[in-house]
Length: 142
Image 1: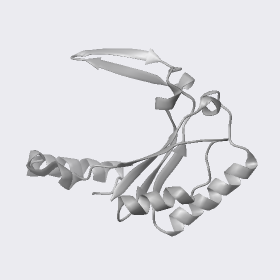
Image 2 (image 1 turned 45 degrees about the horizontal axis):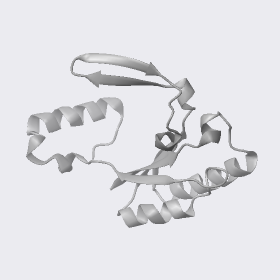
Image 3 (image 1 turned 180 degrees about the vertical axis):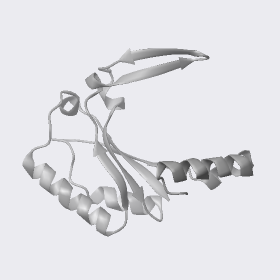
Image 4 (image 1 turned 90 degrees about the horizontal axis):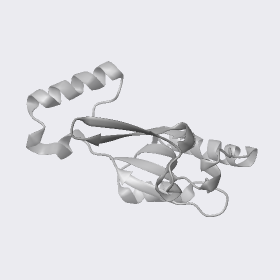
């Protein structure tokens, strides 16, 4: 099972405040544990929303909205992608992580859809096309 671990943004991350050496060291050790355990598939911090954009869809119309975005509580400052056996295991790993923000922070854990989750809607032809694209992009088949 794969889980996306989402680090919620705060006023500091949105202001572009970078972690100090102590936190970077703690996170490096934590990431090393994740890698050694075969849990971490990916993980990165994200630039503030002021450097981002959103694309809004309305039927065939596309509208681009440049950041920053007002609702900090709805923004993501970073992420990990974990490969674990259960949601409970993902929770246990998250509980071990250093607090990524000064003061309070919130981490969201969301399961990633796997190919088999789509059932009959993912026809053999669509499944084959998905596997071909994953092979071309270097992503592992799920």
